[in-house]
Length: 120
Length: 111
View 1 (cartoon, chains in turn red, purple):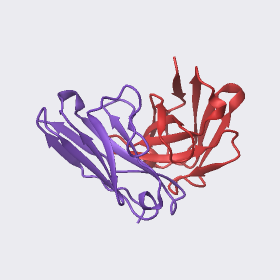
View 2 (view 1 turned 30 degrees about the vertical axis):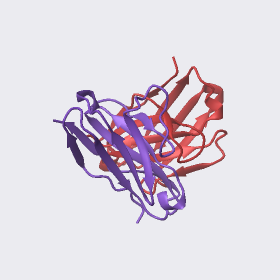
View 3 (view 1 turned 90 degrees about the horizontal axis):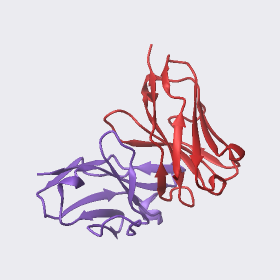
View 4 (view 1 turned 45 degrees about the horizontal axis):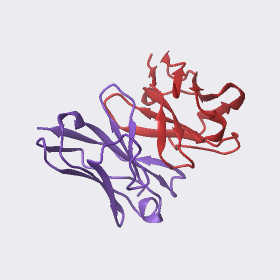
């Protein structure tokens, strides 16, 4: 089945770090831009970052710039989000997702999400 | 300002037609970036509903349609059904942000 499976979420203290992983199944991972999108409970969707096919281009939202780093390993069909200096406002469900063809184009496959809770 | 503005909520009776607007600006929709729509049920990941302003992925009923007028894109749902009750989000790219933008989301209630 074509799918994305996230892992790595959980509770973390303010100022701490967490690394999210996302593994892709049953599609050619290396030909797609990939993205992370988050959603605070009860609130809307917020784009976090995206990365191109070979990892040479990336963009991130101003709210996470300098703290979060998106990366990928095409040999492992995996996407990552390294989150440092975490704040309470980073508490959210984090979705790994596949971008159809270019930044801003449609997200045509979403993972199930992994919850990150930043709290002391 | 780099935002996509959606009404917080819309409602309609079964069988009726509702529209959800998504208003942007010159740095996103006005710059020619296309808009995509997503449907999200509580506790679930979003799914793609409309892409490139007007196109439906395979499997999406033709009751759902998209349109563009200036810097406003709209999602129309005809023949409203109880199963359409969900949150709907528009999404595009923004030059000023150098990144992706989501609308605030619209909660559709089927009366």
